[in-house]
Image (cartoon, rainbow, N blue to C red; front, side, top):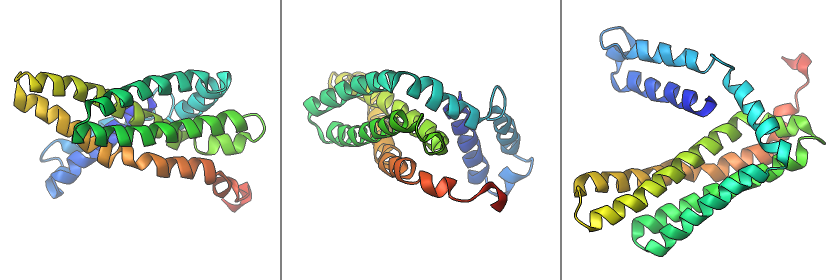
Length: 201
């Protein structure tokens, strides 16, 4: 819920942006979609509440075992991409692998710190939620790309299949590539988040 509602807010914000001034006022209707999307990040628990649940009840509860089981499935997709061997598949495999490793590093950090240093573990909860969501989306796009490559090679609906391949490559290069930086912010940046006393606010 947390990831998809945050993405709906980003997409509708871009919808306003591409319409320019007309998007900001009511001429196109884009602004109404943006307002409607904003409440989605609040209903049924704000994004931070959902992210805290991901850290505490979904990740730390079993020491990251479930999260790592998903990561193992993603690694199998990476192997399939590598075996495919074409430039797009190899590029997506590279980005997917780096994003998966970033995810696993964060899972390890959360598992190691939730009890002993909970402020550090929870400080990066929202970035962790977004990292996990981006990784899962990239994984599904990679799986779709494998199917699309196979069907395109058979001559089935080639323009559509090529669009699927291009979309997966774009996502890998422009979204999955952010994962290592997010990992670093979560794992190494917790101290900066918690450094100021409450009185400073």
